[in-house]
Image 1 (cartoon, helix red, strand yellow):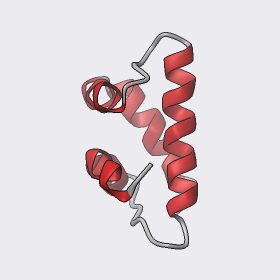
Image 2 (cartoon, rainbow, N blue to C red):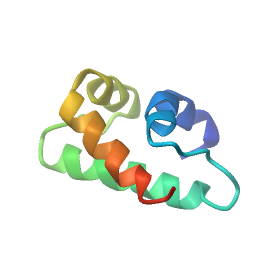
Image 3 (cartoon, helix red, strand yellow):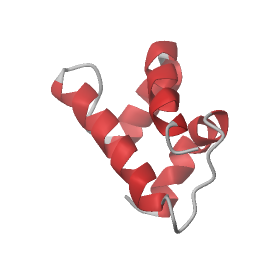
Length: 74
């Protein structure tokens, strides 16, 4: 995922207290990819990144889950 794609997740990253840097961008990318992949394979989220972003923003439980995963990098 490119840094441009992270712009979609800026509010989630901010809530997690996470600033993307050269040191952690691969890990951030991996966590977001894994989370969306898990949810998409379970039929709870679209595999399309634009749709997934909206679904995560609109679903408080998914948002909290992703923030918790990202906080592990702080």
